[in-house]
Amino acid sequence: MLEFEFIVNPKSGHNRAGRMWETFHSQHPEIAPGRVHWTERRGHAEEIARDLRLQGVTRMVAVGGDGLLNEVVNGLFDQEDVGQPKGTNNDPPILLGHFPAGSGCDFARQLGLSRDPATWSQLLTSGRQVPIDVGNAQWGSPDNLVGHRFFVTVAMAGIAGKIAASMDRFGKPLGGLLSYLLVSLRHVLTARSNQIELSIDGQEQEPRSYHLIALANTATTGGMQIAPRADPTDGWFDLLLVGDLSRWRLLTHFPRIYQGKLDGVPRVEQRRVRSLTANAGAAQVLMNIDGEPLGELPVRIEMLPAALTMLAPAE
Image 1 (cartoon, helix red, strand yellow):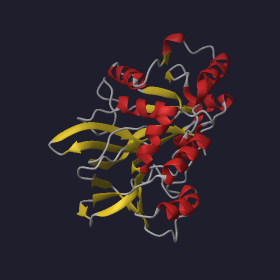
Image 2: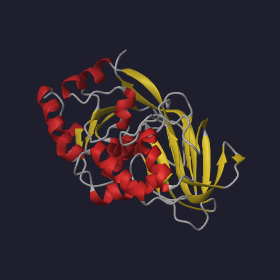
Image 3: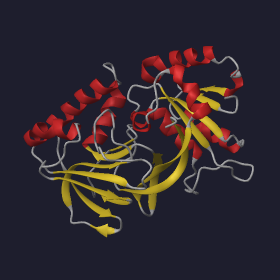
């Protein structure tokens, strides 16, 4: 266990993460204080992970929610070199663990990671190493890229981008799942679709109006079963397209979309893809990446199969 460096966001899950870490640490006093890195602001975990990687550290644990995990993952990759995350010392591979302690923890749910601090040491001592797919999103025009982000759960555009912006603005006073549900319903009631041009795996599609475009690496986002069959180890995204439904139809079918029961829902498409380009012209269409309000169309997203090695519970 002493081989790992721990990156902890004590404020994750309404300060739950800090308390859960203290519970775990009290049972394992052998963890030296110098191996525990506390985040102090947004983006700090990415900086810590990048510094540790450049120092040659090859074993890290992210303690917090999906946002903290996203930052750590981004610290392990360089946009200029989108292969395996690397360190120094002849670029040894990095092994990442995750102790879920946030309000949503969609990735942990997918991988079967426990929220019980009493079980966390088992992950480090007997967990199996699993190759995890990573998404790479770059937004802006091809000749003027303005942002990029790696992700491990879901990247979305449209109504989900507005939901993420609202969640970021108002927080999660009712907890992750209920807050996300209520904010989602509010935006459904005022939803407007956007005309978007898509290219899927290099094939241009006929421009259509969409409420939501989602590339899922995991089954859930914010507790919503966006893609029930998504698997972060299969090398594919599950693409969900929600077309130009009226607000009434969108509201009526929202429970089915929320629960992933999409068969028979009109103007909803699903398929497996490895890359997607989306362009909304002059319209502002916001994005939601791993639950965070990041970027806007146009965007190009590609799959990086088995790009990250993570610990999962022993079978």
